[in-house]
Length: 360
Image 1 (cartoon, one colour):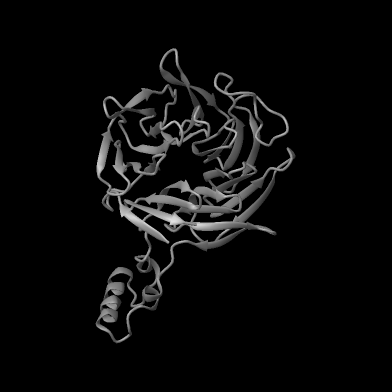
Image 2 (cartoon, rainbow, N blue to C red):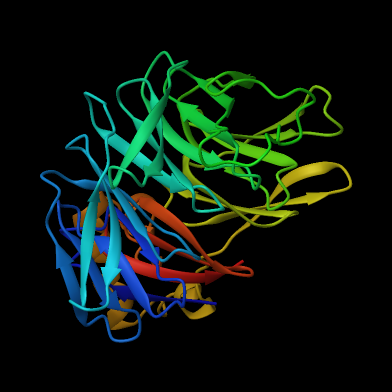
């Protein structure tokens, strides 16, 4: 089952969204420099922030600290903290030190750090410096092109990245200032900050990366309509399974549990992959045409004749084929953001301005 809410007009769209820890508020950007926070039930606007100068590309709301982090094409990031006295969200300065757009941002599971994917071929890993009251960064610089996506290992010290240089990589993100004893996240020997643990090739841009809840599996999706599952067992070399599918590329990935992964992207319809005895396999799309819509109107009805002329106008054909057959979908544009809601529930937002909640 799934239901949707219209966050913006279909001509505006939503670039990213995130849920508050209690699930009662939604933070989103209406494809602009603005960050809005609305009531999740009524969509009544509660706060609006315009500190960014260009499009807000990603939002992440940490479940424990209640901090929101945003990044933007203006090459900046802000950490937002709610001031109870003033009843307002206050931004904290982040020293990113990048010269091109920031594209993705993710909190580490422990909330001590966050990482930013950028067009500057690097990943700033940021942590709070209390003496100066700002967030400073250490740089991972091993990429040869734009970094498109990020995923933290559950240990908060290992970071996976996806890049337009056709590679997915896994790096050490251990920062001694804020982290405890180093954890190699399933690899045999720890390495220094910014050094790679593993590198995986793909035949297209790596749009999305995601870790399973235990951190034993890393999934990454390529622009060549493929998804790859790297399994880490006992500190040895990872084993990789590749699935190529006959639909459009996935741009977002999320594990709902160890054996279920959801992907979404240009098809505007979340795809479910499941693990079994023989490995991972595509299971099904979540959005399905209802029986009434699938059957269509009776051949001699007025509705049938109207549909015929509408199809001729849109596609040049009397039959409802091609682009004219997707009006039943809950999303009418590419899915740009996918966020967990706890358990097997998650939400998606897209270029059509809709927020859809799903159960995998």
